[in-house]
Amino acid sequence: AYAILVQGYKETENYRFKALAGDLNLRVARRQVREIREAANADPTNAEKKMQASKVERQLCEMEVKEFEERVVHNPTDLQLRFELGQRLLQIGQDEKAIEQSQQARGSPGILTQVLMGLGVAFGRLGWLDEAEQSYREAIASHPVLTDDLAAELRYGLMEVLQRKGTDGRDAA
Image 1 (cartoon, rainbow, N blue to C red):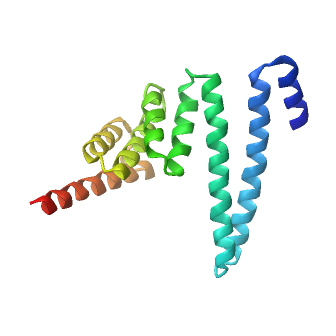
Image 2 (cartoon, rainbow, N blue to C red):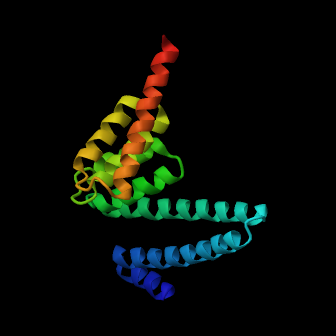
Image 3 (tube, rainbow, N blue to C red):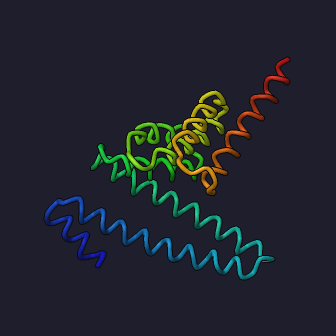
């Protein structure tokens, strides 16, 4: 199937074929990562398996970043793609790039809360605490449910930022 999709892309230059081929690659890679993670979980005392699982998870995330970067180039107005790219960049610690993609994805309906949470995480990691606080507060205000896991994560993120701001203020004094 992969070869047929790649051939279709080469013959027609229709990017959709290339994106579908990328989806197949990612699906295979995710399955392999899942199998390695399950093997590591089955033998929790084996540090080598845990390290291998972490390594392949990072490789998968980097593979996803490359795939989504290419897709964003071909579909620059697709805010969902920008959100997905921002999430992957956040996972591998490329916070400034994650902020750039997430800020562009803010206009996408239905994912605003998740976008704002990602911004809060990235801003917090970079030490931009005022921006992190604002992002978390906006995310909490935009999230309609007060009692689900996401609401708890948002409040916890805000609490961490406020604690850091308080600690930083005391250290400066």
